[in-house]
Image 1 (cartoon, rainbow, N blue to C red):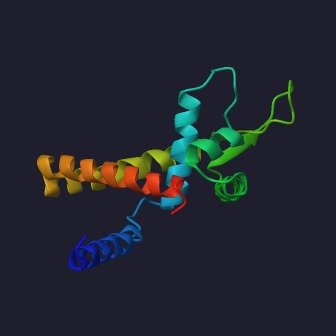
Image 2 (cartoon, helix red, strand yellow):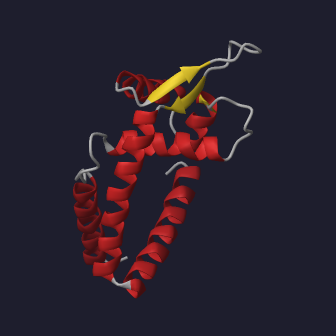
Length: 152
């Protein structure tokens, strides 16, 4: 790769990182909280109806976060009355997490705002450029995963 291309790529990635740290207004929750509420809701929608919520282990896997990081996020969400932890009489060792009514409302509001933001980006980029960007992001992600697996 030419030095100038490498430098242009580094600069573009730096600009994207700087832009990525911009926090679009999602109401009263952060992007991380939105992501976690969304993961909880997704797991609950796709699980056995007999379970009272999502298990922390499953959340850790779905969110690709360590259990301590998930627990810290859940503590914050619990303090904001967006989730509740529950156990079952059959196995009190397993802790489940589910959204409160407030959590559902916050997720819905933030989801609508995030959806409008994505719609505006797609509108401004156009269908063709959006598809190309998705293709390039997927390709870049594959390259980065390969490098990570090789330990580079």
